[in-house]
Length: 426
Image 1 (cartoon, rainbow, N blue to C red):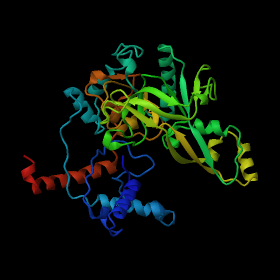
Image 2 (cartoon, rainbow, N blue to C red):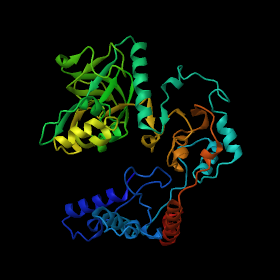
Image 3 (spheres, rainbow, N blue to C red):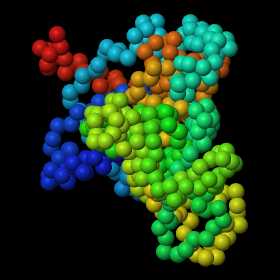
Image 4 (tube, one colour):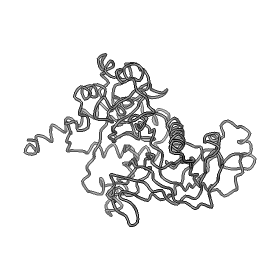
């Protein structure tokens, strides 16, 4: 999950906190890294195994451009990773209990899926080897893992509305509060609505519209208190919304997405969420494991060129008023999203009781993690349902050269570590 840019920032912060020489590595303290390189690459960052020397012609040199500050920081972070001198490889699989399925996953993570693996997974394809209804227990509670944020949002919106009608409740949607930070007033058509409908991966993970219904699964989108088990990706069950009822609207914007009887809420204060894994078990006046998740504020930049790509006339207005094409938005919202559907990225590190997946990859870059990560979230094959038939090629995506080279490098250090500390490897 950590990339080179983030590692460079952490290195700088630790050096500052320790009041040490900025040129020292991590402020002179020892650092322990935990992770698995056969996972998704970090978003908008270079992975820790990125090898700058492997490029025959460095892009900046090839184009005659000077290296940016970020380029320099990333190379420094890579040099830091190359200083790792003690490696322990955890070789025992702790999640997957199904031996045949474990063997399948071992092949998939190396991009070596064979015909027998494909046939075995096809026994879990709905309508081919598996005859179930996703509307009935236990599969109606299984999260659907998808590859795109937009699809995840659409599935979650529909699932929350269906859940509300099942329990005879009116759908409720919390609307985020956006404030545009600009020197000049910006008066553009539908600006508020367009900002609210942005995917939350473009808004610092704070959704513009958050549909809620009691009893629904949710994911925390912020590190509230990691030491208490309230971190980004923590799962919970939404129980109640606390807000000022004078801000309640019987109908509201975005009715094309939600139903006409939806209640839209502004100025929410906090949500009561049941988090079983939290270390906070009994707060005053609240039931066991109920945690108040407060509204938070974050800022993000929005490029108006992209936001109004469908309306060329808007760019003419910006030029006439001499307004910048990028605006800064401060958003106040609940750091939660529905968890009926989650992205494969977000599922990393989680153990799920059951999952529903689609192994047909969307257009774009496909990584070894694209199949390996969703498939490895469960303990056994019978906990997997696959939406539709798929090609064996999904099981044959190889790790990148950078991943393989780094794993081989760490394996050598692992052998050296075992020799150096033989008494601990009994």
